[in-house]
Image (cartoon, rainbow, N blue to C red; front, side, top):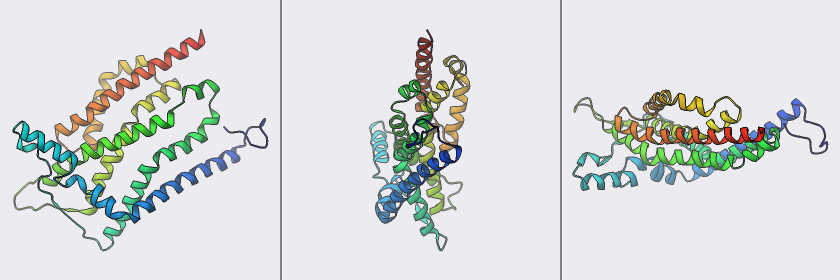
Length: 273
């Protein structure tokens, strides 16, 4: 995969590959730890202004939905207008939540660097033409991941918090959400959104490997709609509105993947001529 620095004409052995991979992983983990420590120190900003913000009425998305509701006379669009109480019922609950959130924030911030380290390990194994076509992989992968995280944070998270936090089976039951439950729901929505936004990159890699073709993707377009709806149902609260909001960008990303796959196939065909 990589060539030794002191022996440019000889390929690295299996153990040398493992050693190189180990250092890439070490640097990746260290970057996550560094950002996690920073997030741990500035916990007041991370929790009060980021993690817990979507449940507040003045959060950007909540305020905009409420403005839209007033404009079209739909009061139900004023989501999270009555913030629920979050409680902790474990002795070490707040401390463990603090650590877990710090690692999640560290991973999200360090993702571009982590992907770059992994890409540096893979890159030497690619041929010249493959390297040429793979330019910008780190940038676009990181961009899509962060776009997905932002989409989940500003749109899906407030809707999930509103639906699940305000849902009542009876007026006799008071919603007092456990801190661990809130963070688990919040983080799963954010990370899942970031991962599913990588769909075009996955399609590109599968197309370059010859595992999928544009014709295959087009022929299974109807099946992809079902899969996308299932994914949307998994990462959103059980209401149609949220599922549609998640499904729409995924449909667009799938079509972008088809377009990129066509370009890859066309370039490959022209190189063979």
